[in-house]
Image 1 (cartoon, one colour):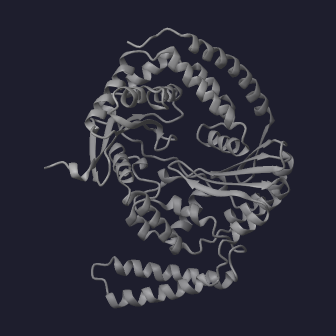
Image 2 (cartoon, rainbow, N blue to C red):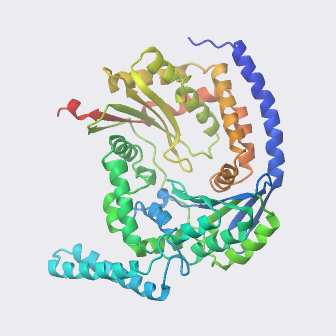
Length: 504
């Protein structure tokens, strides 16, 4: 039985938490009052926080589209589009757009013919060879007109740092930091690439992404396990496929597919921008009206229809590879918008985050049957119903079976016995520290503003999250453990060394 009393250390932590939460709440409220917003006539929203500590600005553009929006045949297209967004526009990245445009159109036509012929019942090998030669020639001519990396180079010349983008299951996001006197430069460049993008060098970039998949999944045992684990855990919802997509889809996605996908999901009404730093909000809004209102409005894409159905029983998958063993266990949980979210965050933290967590204490320190353990909450995304997952890497001489049994024992304890006040207080203190630390960085604030606006429906949630954390009780944690950590809600994935392969 775990000690349920609050010791001296816990009392000190509790005091620090209560004191710092009060100070933090005041600080967050003060920052919140300084945020200003403006929505353009085409539906694009800007969120601005002035911070004049240093002459720099952080920009964060959030496209409300990720791999969860992809259907069969185009998995991976969100990630492809993210890569293509840096290839330039009608004016940037080309020596002669008029000539290049004709070549790109011709290349699309030839590729469409080639795809149809290769997919026909009786493909004509001579025609395929002829089309491939024509495609390669056209592609080479188009590439000769490209000014490689001009978008990136121009940004760096203007003092830009951290120019990057990333695609997740839930979103695609574009970030950069610039000196405060480069606000209009960003306005011109960012609006241009969302108004007149040119997806040049598409087939070369697609090959790069296919190599990413080979290196990140197909030749990595853990990558293979996670892909199969998600496919087992989600039979209907698009969380069942990896962000990088399936190889067959990557091979067959066309440049026209990307253009159509862009027009569907990159309308201004589906884009939100946060700008944090040494700016004047009124000037930002004036420039945004000038530059971004040029982009024609369009309807916001309809919400995702598919909801993962209730699981009917425990699922268990095995992946064999040249690797040390690993076991992962996932439980379905609701989206981040659900009232249980904060308590689930506490549960995951107490069970599997850090060296003081229950799993680390039991499996690594005491039993010494694992060398690594952990927990994921909101996996592989959190905008839609997702997973709370835990994993363990067995130590030498020990097995997945031992670790799985130990994991299940610890989860059973958290279901049957309340977590301690000490554990919950530690969670609250560490989470609060993370929130406070995040407020020190303009880029983090910009990312949080867009995330909370899109995923939680209100940018103000950026500054109110601490209240949710503070409100979690021991009873809340036990309730969500009893509600979600059940056998019929569980998926198990095991990585099995090839020399221990399961015999039929």
